[in-house]
Image 1 (tube, rainbow, N blue to C red):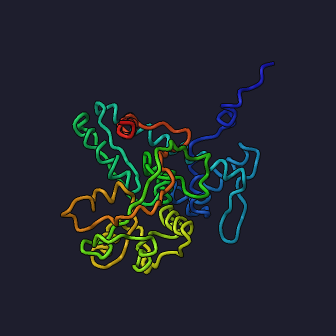
Image 2 (cartoon, rainbow, N blue to C red):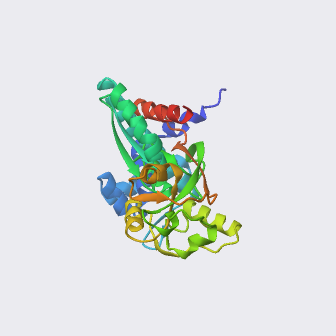
Image 3 (cartoon, rainbow, N blue to C red):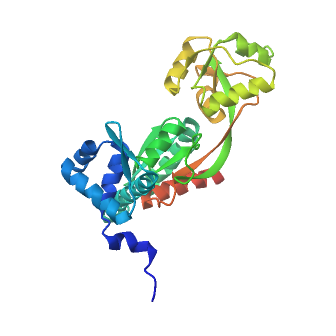
Length: 314
Protein backbone atom coordinates (compact mmCIF):
# COMPACT_ATOMS: atom_id res chain seq x y z
CA UNK A 1 0.00 0.00 0.00
CA UNK A 2 1.54 3.40 -0.97
CA UNK A 3 2.74 5.53 1.91
CA UNK A 4 1.16 8.99 2.33
CA UNK A 5 3.21 11.89 1.01
CA UNK A 6 4.96 13.75 3.81
CA UNK A 7 4.66 17.09 1.98
CA UNK A 8 0.98 17.49 2.82
CA UNK A 9 0.65 15.40 5.98
CA UNK A 10 0.10 18.44 8.23
CA UNK A 11 -2.48 19.88 5.88
CA UNK A 12 -4.35 16.59 5.82
CA UNK A 13 -4.33 16.60 9.62
CA UNK A 14 -6.00 20.00 9.56
CA UNK A 15 -3.18 22.54 9.80
CA UNK A 16 -4.51 25.98 8.83
CA UNK A 17 -3.04 29.41 8.29
CA UNK A 18 -4.60 30.49 11.59
CA UNK A 19 -2.40 27.98 13.42
CA UNK A 20 0.69 29.40 11.75
CA UNK A 21 -0.33 32.97 12.53
CA UNK A 22 -0.82 32.02 16.17
CA UNK A 23 2.56 30.32 16.62
CA UNK A 24 4.33 33.25 14.94
CA UNK A 25 2.52 35.71 17.21
CA UNK A 26 3.42 33.64 20.28
CA UNK A 27 7.07 33.69 19.26
CA UNK A 28 6.94 37.48 19.07
CA UNK A 29 4.88 38.20 22.20
CA UNK A 30 5.46 35.23 24.56
CA UNK A 31 1.95 35.83 25.91
CA UNK A 32 -1.25 34.15 24.77
CA UNK A 33 -3.38 37.24 25.42
CA UNK A 34 -1.13 39.47 23.30
CA UNK A 35 -0.96 36.86 20.57
CA UNK A 36 -4.76 36.62 20.55
CA UNK A 37 -5.06 40.41 20.29
CA UNK A 38 -2.68 40.43 17.34
CA UNK A 39 -4.88 37.86 15.60
CA UNK A 40 -8.05 39.80 16.45
CA UNK A 41 -9.53 36.98 18.53
CA UNK A 42 -10.17 36.18 22.20
CA UNK A 43 -7.75 34.44 24.53
CA UNK A 44 -10.04 31.37 24.97
CA UNK A 45 -10.29 31.02 21.19
CA UNK A 46 -6.51 31.29 20.88
CA UNK A 47 -6.10 28.67 23.62
CA UNK A 48 -8.34 26.26 21.69
CA UNK A 49 -6.40 26.97 18.51
CA UNK A 50 -3.15 26.22 20.33
CA UNK A 51 -4.53 22.92 21.63
CA UNK A 52 -5.61 22.01 18.08
CA UNK A 53 -2.13 22.79 16.79
CA UNK A 54 -0.45 20.53 19.32
CA UNK A 55 -2.88 17.73 18.51
CA UNK A 56 -2.15 18.11 14.79
CA UNK A 57 1.60 18.06 15.33
CA UNK A 58 1.63 15.38 17.99
CA UNK A 59 4.10 17.49 19.95
CA UNK A 60 3.92 20.25 22.55
CA UNK A 61 4.81 23.63 21.08
CA UNK A 62 4.70 25.67 24.27
CA UNK A 63 5.27 25.57 28.00
CA UNK A 64 4.49 27.97 30.80
CA UNK A 65 7.33 30.28 31.76
CA UNK A 66 6.73 32.72 34.58
CA UNK A 67 3.81 34.90 33.52
CA UNK A 68 4.21 34.08 29.87
CA UNK A 69 4.79 31.28 27.40
CA UNK A 70 8.05 29.82 26.09
CA UNK A 71 8.11 27.83 22.88
CA UNK A 72 9.53 24.32 22.87
CA UNK A 73 12.12 23.39 20.22
CA UNK A 74 9.25 22.07 18.08
CA UNK A 75 7.38 25.35 18.58
CA UNK A 76 10.44 27.43 17.66
CA UNK A 77 10.96 25.38 14.49
CA UNK A 78 7.33 25.81 13.48
CA UNK A 79 7.36 29.55 14.31
CA UNK A 80 10.44 30.09 12.16
CA UNK A 81 8.76 28.45 9.18
CA UNK A 82 5.42 30.11 9.93
CA UNK A 83 7.07 33.52 9.60
CA UNK A 84 8.46 32.49 6.22
CA UNK A 85 4.99 31.41 5.08
CA UNK A 86 3.52 34.76 6.17
CA UNK A 87 6.24 36.70 4.37
CA UNK A 88 5.81 34.60 1.22
CA UNK A 89 2.06 35.23 1.20
CA UNK A 90 2.65 38.97 1.58
CA UNK A 91 5.18 38.87 -1.26
CA UNK A 92 2.72 36.94 -3.41
CA UNK A 93 0.12 39.66 -2.89
CA UNK A 94 2.69 42.30 -3.87
CA UNK A 95 3.67 40.36 -6.99
CA UNK A 96 0.06 39.96 -8.09
CA UNK A 97 -0.47 43.69 -7.58
CA UNK A 98 2.63 44.45 -9.65
CA UNK A 99 1.34 42.25 -12.47
CA UNK A 100 -2.02 43.99 -12.32
CA UNK A 101 -0.24 47.34 -12.64
CA UNK A 102 1.57 46.25 -15.78
CA UNK A 103 4.99 45.60 -14.26
CA UNK A 104 5.17 48.52 -11.83
CA UNK A 105 6.25 47.73 -8.32
CA UNK A 106 7.70 49.04 -5.07
CA UNK A 107 11.06 47.74 -3.87
CA UNK A 108 12.41 48.05 -0.32
CA UNK A 109 16.20 48.04 -0.27
CA UNK A 110 18.54 48.00 2.70
CA UNK A 111 22.19 49.00 2.32
CA UNK A 112 25.21 49.98 4.34
CA UNK A 113 26.59 53.39 3.40
CA UNK A 114 29.15 52.64 0.68
CA UNK A 115 26.98 50.33 -1.46
CA UNK A 116 24.06 52.73 -1.03
CA UNK A 117 26.08 55.48 -2.73
CA UNK A 118 28.17 53.40 -5.11
CA UNK A 119 25.65 50.79 -6.28
CA UNK A 120 22.07 51.51 -5.21
CA UNK A 121 21.80 55.11 -6.42
CA UNK A 122 23.19 54.45 -9.93
CA UNK A 123 20.90 51.40 -10.28
CA UNK A 124 17.91 53.51 -9.28
CA UNK A 125 18.84 56.13 -11.88
CA UNK A 126 18.94 53.42 -14.55
CA UNK A 127 15.64 51.93 -13.39
CA UNK A 128 13.99 55.33 -13.43
CA UNK A 129 14.70 55.62 -17.16
CA UNK A 130 13.84 52.04 -18.15
CA UNK A 131 10.95 51.43 -15.72
CA UNK A 132 9.51 54.84 -14.74
CA UNK A 133 6.56 53.32 -12.85
CA UNK A 134 8.85 51.46 -10.45
CA UNK A 135 9.34 53.05 -7.01
CA UNK A 136 11.88 52.28 -4.32
CA UNK A 137 12.52 52.89 -0.64
CA UNK A 138 16.13 52.76 0.61
CA UNK A 139 17.08 52.20 4.25
CA UNK A 140 20.72 52.94 5.16
CA UNK A 141 21.77 51.38 8.45
CA UNK A 142 24.25 48.89 9.97
CA UNK A 143 24.01 45.33 8.66
CA UNK A 144 22.59 43.83 11.86
CA UNK A 145 19.66 46.26 11.79
CA UNK A 146 19.05 45.66 8.09
CA UNK A 147 19.14 41.87 8.41
CA UNK A 148 16.59 41.97 11.22
CA UNK A 149 14.30 44.03 8.98
CA UNK A 150 14.92 41.62 6.11
CA UNK A 151 13.91 38.61 8.22
CA UNK A 152 10.81 40.46 9.40
CA UNK A 153 9.75 40.95 5.79
CA UNK A 154 10.23 44.73 5.89
CA UNK A 155 12.97 44.72 3.22
CA UNK A 156 13.27 42.84 -0.07
CA UNK A 157 17.05 42.49 -0.01
CA UNK A 158 20.11 44.00 1.64
CA UNK A 159 23.53 45.09 0.46
CA UNK A 160 25.54 44.42 3.58
CA UNK A 161 27.14 41.73 5.70
CA UNK A 162 25.78 38.83 7.68
CA UNK A 163 25.82 39.80 11.38
CA UNK A 164 27.98 37.79 13.75
CA UNK A 165 26.01 34.78 14.92
CA UNK A 166 23.39 35.07 12.15
CA UNK A 167 21.42 31.89 11.46
CA UNK A 168 22.71 30.84 8.04
CA UNK A 169 19.59 28.74 7.51
CA UNK A 170 17.56 31.96 7.25
CA UNK A 171 19.79 34.16 5.08
CA UNK A 172 21.64 33.74 1.79
CA UNK A 173 24.50 36.01 0.72
CA UNK A 174 26.21 36.51 -2.63
CA UNK A 175 29.55 38.10 -1.76
CA UNK A 176 30.50 41.14 -3.81
CA UNK A 177 33.77 42.72 -2.67
CA UNK A 178 35.91 43.95 0.20
CA UNK A 179 35.85 47.62 1.21
CA UNK A 180 39.20 49.45 1.43
CA UNK A 181 39.09 52.30 3.93
CA UNK A 182 40.30 55.91 3.70
CA UNK A 183 40.67 58.45 6.50
CA UNK A 184 39.05 61.87 6.18
CA UNK A 185 39.56 65.11 8.09
CA UNK A 186 38.35 68.70 7.65
CA UNK A 187 39.99 71.04 5.18
CA UNK A 188 42.82 72.96 6.86
CA UNK A 189 43.67 70.03 9.14
CA UNK A 190 47.33 69.59 10.03
CA UNK A 191 47.36 66.15 8.44
CA UNK A 192 46.66 67.81 5.06
CA UNK A 193 49.60 70.24 5.28
CA UNK A 194 51.68 68.27 2.80
CA UNK A 195 54.12 66.90 5.37
CA UNK A 196 54.65 63.12 5.41
CA UNK A 197 52.11 61.33 7.62
CA UNK A 198 53.10 58.29 9.67
CA UNK A 199 50.61 55.86 11.26
CA UNK A 200 51.64 57.01 14.73
CA UNK A 201 50.82 60.63 13.83
CA UNK A 202 47.13 59.64 13.57
CA UNK A 203 46.97 58.89 17.30
CA UNK A 204 47.42 62.57 18.17
CA UNK A 205 43.79 63.18 17.17
CA UNK A 206 40.40 61.97 18.28
CA UNK A 207 38.69 59.42 16.02
CA UNK A 208 35.01 58.98 15.21
CA UNK A 209 34.08 55.32 14.89
CA UNK A 210 30.90 53.25 14.90
CA UNK A 211 30.27 50.81 17.74
CA UNK A 212 33.04 48.45 18.84
CA UNK A 213 31.24 45.45 17.34
CA UNK A 214 30.96 47.03 13.86
CA UNK A 215 33.09 45.57 11.03
CA UNK A 216 34.70 48.97 10.37
CA UNK A 217 35.77 49.56 13.98
CA UNK A 218 37.05 45.99 14.26
CA UNK A 219 39.07 46.35 11.05
CA UNK A 220 40.64 49.64 12.22
CA UNK A 221 41.65 48.26 15.60
CA UNK A 222 43.01 45.06 14.08
CA UNK A 223 45.14 46.96 11.56
CA UNK A 224 46.55 49.30 14.20
CA UNK A 225 47.40 46.28 16.33
CA UNK A 226 49.21 44.74 13.35
CA UNK A 227 51.26 47.94 13.17
CA UNK A 228 52.08 47.70 16.88
CA UNK A 229 49.86 50.68 17.75
CA UNK A 230 47.14 51.02 20.41
CA UNK A 231 43.47 51.67 19.77
CA UNK A 232 42.83 55.22 18.52
CA UNK A 233 41.62 57.93 20.92
CA UNK A 234 37.85 57.99 20.71
CA UNK A 235 35.35 60.20 22.53
CA UNK A 236 32.33 59.42 20.37
CA UNK A 237 30.90 56.24 18.88
CA UNK A 238 28.14 56.64 16.33
CA UNK A 239 26.66 54.75 13.41
CA UNK A 240 25.24 58.03 12.06
CA UNK A 241 26.99 59.06 8.87
CA UNK A 242 25.67 62.64 9.09
CA UNK A 243 26.84 63.04 12.68
CA UNK A 244 30.25 61.70 11.70
CA UNK A 245 30.59 64.25 8.89
CA UNK A 246 29.44 67.10 11.13
CA UNK A 247 31.90 66.23 13.87
CA UNK A 248 34.81 65.92 11.43
CA UNK A 249 33.97 69.27 9.84
CA UNK A 250 33.78 71.07 13.21
CA UNK A 251 36.76 69.48 15.01
CA UNK A 252 40.17 67.94 14.36
CA UNK A 253 38.73 64.43 14.50
CA UNK A 254 39.60 61.66 12.04
CA UNK A 255 36.93 59.43 10.55
CA UNK A 256 37.61 56.18 8.68
CA UNK A 257 35.18 55.74 5.78
CA UNK A 258 34.83 53.25 2.96
CA UNK A 259 37.02 54.49 0.13
CA UNK A 260 34.04 54.87 -2.21
CA UNK A 261 32.31 57.13 0.32
CA UNK A 262 35.46 59.16 1.02
CA UNK A 263 35.93 59.72 -2.71
CA UNK A 264 32.41 61.15 -2.99
CA UNK A 265 32.65 63.51 -0.02
CA UNK A 266 36.36 64.38 0.06
CA UNK A 267 37.51 63.71 -3.48
CA UNK A 268 37.48 67.25 -4.88
CA UNK A 269 39.53 70.36 -3.97
CA UNK A 270 36.43 72.34 -3.02
CA UNK A 271 35.04 69.66 -0.69
CA UNK A 272 34.89 70.53 3.02
CA UNK A 273 36.85 67.34 3.77
CA UNK A 274 40.14 65.90 2.62
CA UNK A 275 41.58 62.39 2.50
CA UNK A 276 44.60 61.86 4.73
CA UNK A 277 47.55 61.04 2.41
CA UNK A 278 48.31 57.71 4.03
CA UNK A 279 47.08 54.26 3.10
CA UNK A 280 46.79 52.66 6.50
CA UNK A 281 45.89 49.33 4.89
CA UNK A 282 42.49 48.95 6.57
CA UNK A 283 40.12 46.68 4.66
CA UNK A 284 36.62 45.74 5.81
CA UNK A 285 35.57 42.18 4.86
CA UNK A 286 33.32 41.77 1.84
CA UNK A 287 29.70 42.85 1.76
CA UNK A 288 27.19 41.08 -0.43
CA UNK A 289 23.62 40.79 -1.66
CA UNK A 290 21.66 39.31 1.25
CA UNK A 291 18.25 37.69 0.75
CA UNK A 292 15.92 35.49 2.76
CA UNK A 293 16.84 31.84 2.26
CA UNK A 294 14.36 29.96 0.09
CA UNK A 295 12.43 33.09 -0.92
CA UNK A 296 11.97 34.53 -4.40
CA UNK A 297 12.22 38.23 -5.07
CA UNK A 298 9.24 39.97 -6.61
CA UNK A 299 9.76 40.88 -10.29
CA UNK A 300 10.47 44.52 -9.39
CA UNK A 301 12.97 43.58 -6.68
CA UNK A 302 14.64 41.04 -8.97
CA UNK A 303 14.96 43.74 -11.65
CA UNK A 304 16.73 46.15 -9.29
CA UNK A 305 18.96 43.42 -7.89
CA UNK A 306 19.97 42.50 -11.43
CA UNK A 307 20.74 46.14 -12.30
CA UNK A 308 22.94 46.38 -9.21
CA UNK A 309 24.84 43.19 -10.00
CA UNK A 310 25.31 44.38 -13.60
CA UNK A 311 26.86 47.60 -12.31
CA UNK A 312 29.22 45.66 -10.05
CA UNK A 313 30.37 43.48 -12.96
CA UNK A 314 30.78 46.45 -15.33
